[in-house]
Length: 106
Image 1 (cartoon, one colour):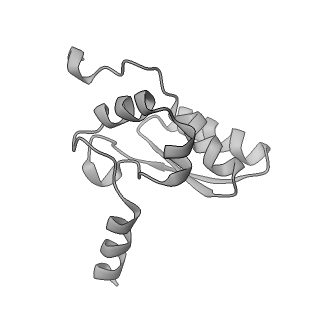
Image 2: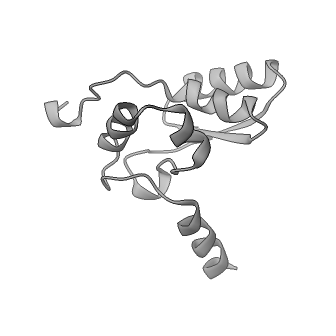
Image 3: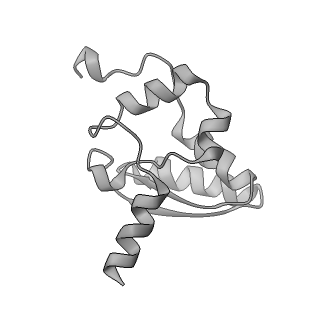
């Protein structure tokens, strides 16, 4: 992997999903690794949360994480910068963009 794509601060996407679920969100775990993704779902469900696994390729912009208050309020500025470096579009998606897409598709 090129040095520029390496995350300087270890982030665990499973913990991010667990954080959302622990705060009442229904979580979709999207990953190429079916075994790891399903393990995260199982952990969330065992803790009383709601989660579902979908196999996805996070190198696609449409599969990237969204910038929400729950994420930004629980990660440091350095962690947010590191998370952004993992996404090929150079930023996190915004919930408004998803809403606009859903309205356009409906």
